[in-house]
Image 1: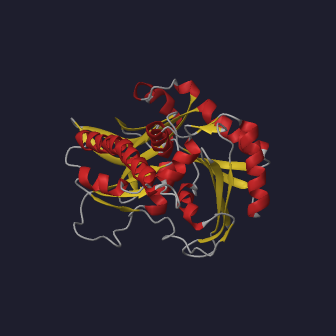
Image 2: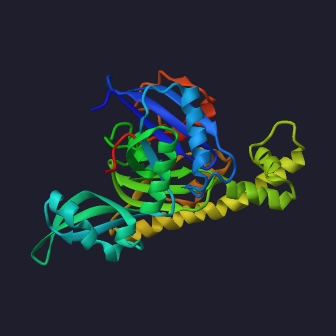
Image 3: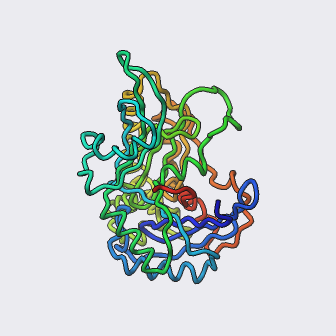
Length: 346
């Protein structure tokens, strides 16, 4: 295992990286950094301006002083599909060799245009036939290549690509039962709200069971505030955050507009979790953890508590690492580093 691992998150508003030292248990988080991106450089989780991303990554390495250029890249957008699939039993090596021939009917991407991977969930019998249940991941190859090429243009060496929701489960998910309060049963959903993209991942003790990626996030709330008050998006963003010194009436109207849009967003989350439970008889989402910058919206947690029959709380991405960090951005932004991937997706 490498003694140093660096995870990179290429978000809609900034590029971010975290460096972990694997010499200790738990791993030590030694460096994090963030560099902003120009609007439109990344949209809906996809790289639109590879050169702009490469320039930002070079500046990120200059500012962050990371000790390795080998990186794992996180990806989360609607060009990625995650499905639970049942197939006739075969060994893992046989599955990997024949995967592209077995799963075309399950994904809306031609297999020749996709990067495929899987995780074995369990084995079972169906009508006397041995079967295997896998979690299938299919990502559009061109989208992944664009991400990798932007990193390579910055003289970085991508050694893996990881699905952001999986990385977040490892970072904040309850995977060993420690810290549980109340009921011991049920699955956990982690909802990560970014600027343009929201990911929902339901897992059972660290094993992902369901992933949905929504093309919506904090910017939708900002846009709703801007439309309602007839102001620019920069001012709307500040009002949404409860800017000190703003007109109290304007702040109140901004909060009403923000919560109105957030209520629709909360309903989307509820619908996703209801769909998961309808597809998994007997499944119950016991806990919901919120992460990402968009989750900080005042009142969002209460909206979800009112709509979900689950415990709702904030995820804490640093509880599995020793945070002896050197940082080039404020503490309030560090939660986004839960995105940083620390495992390989071949």
